[in-house]
Image (cartoon, rainbow, N blue to C red; front, side, top):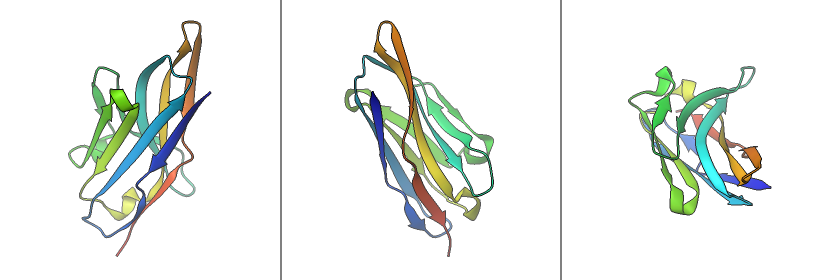
Length: 120
């Protein structure tokens, strides 16, 4: 099993910044794509940003230029730096990772979620 532990959420004023972290642990043979999703009350869970093992990134249009995703492969950790936060960024943010636990077995795991609230 692969577990994802998120940290870094909280309450911030509009225009402020937060940094989320997500560390993967467990039976990891190979870690492929890692990403962040978010879900606001009454809405579906949407992709915010993703990053491949080689460092190629992808962002939702709504966060381009404000958020930056990065990863430390040695620590099996992905980060999300969020700048110029807006009230509409308020949501529960979930980390996701996929990869292999062996040559024959894959996984896709989710973190427990961390609340981000942008409000004055």
